[in-house]
Amino acid sequence: MDQMDPFERQLARMMRDTHEPVSFEPRHRERLHEGVRARRRTRVVRRTVGCALAVVGVGIGLLLLPGGPTRVQPAEPHPRPVTSPTPTRSATTPGETPTAPPSSAATTSLTTPGGTTSDTPTAPFTTGSSATATATTGENAGVTAPPTPTSTPSDTATAQDQSQGEPSSFTSSLIVSPGSGS
Amino acid sequence: MRIEQGQAGEFEEFVAARWSVLLHLARLLVGGDRHRAEDLAQESLVKLWFVWPTVSQDAPEAYVRKVMVRAAARAGRRRWWGERPVERLPEGAMTGDVSADVAERSRLESALAQLSPSQRAAVVLRYYQDLPEGQVAEALGCPVGTARSHASRGVARLRQILTDAIEPTR
Image (cartoon, rainbow over all chains, first blue to last red):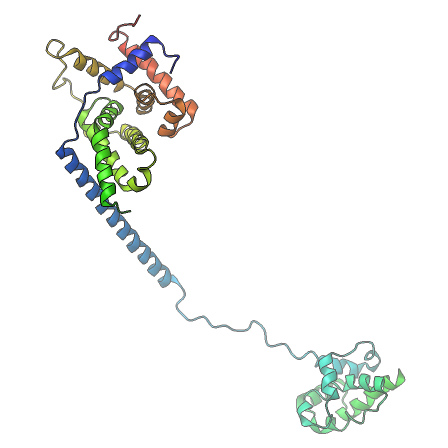
């Protein structure tokens, strides 16, 4: 402000000199209070309208949602047990069985006493792997052989019948040979 | 935000103490209309009331000034604010029967009224409030260069208008 020219100084002086003292009268105070009350009312109304609009919006959104309850359905059927395809392949191709070791589940199912009927669903399928087990242990298939004719379910039997056309007893005899060969 | 009784008393004291200055600032900002100036001052003080607990310890007058400047600029941008142009003024400043101060104020206010709202605000803040350019820019809500440009153009326009009214100082 130091570089003001005469006109600018005169302008500043005019602006200050034209200031006439005015007291803050009661009518000013009353008007100010009225303005505060009006603004407060406006804010309350605005907030209320905002809440109402929000509620209406949420309600409309809920109405537009799909009405039926959502049901969770599996996209695919349950996967079959891992051990199921193994004996079929091993039965069809006995020579490949030692190179592809069976899963541990199959092995454990074999180590259980073979005569029990609780292992019957897996018994015909895991006979191929039983050959592996017997090959390593050097035992014969006498443990696994007895349950297979009695406890083989019909579907596994038919599966093997389709692949080989032989009953499960014949399967066990086939499985023994690669183990003994190796 | 609720204002406690003590804070309300402080607010009343502040308004009573600064009312005259604020009203004169408002009058310069609107170009001389006393009623519009009162409306502007009242509106700004109402806004100050709702932020008083947070502003009172810092700089309440600066807050009011900023609100006032921006509200004046907004009102100036409106096309119509309740006035109609007429061919003859209903009341005019009579040179013979009014004091020199009133005549000078009338000249100043009529000259300010011919500026744009931004130019008027920049000139008033710079030459009446003695604010530096940075604070003028902050109050106007624009860059410093823009505020400087508003002030210089406003002064040039006022120089052109008032060149006959102001006697050159020697």
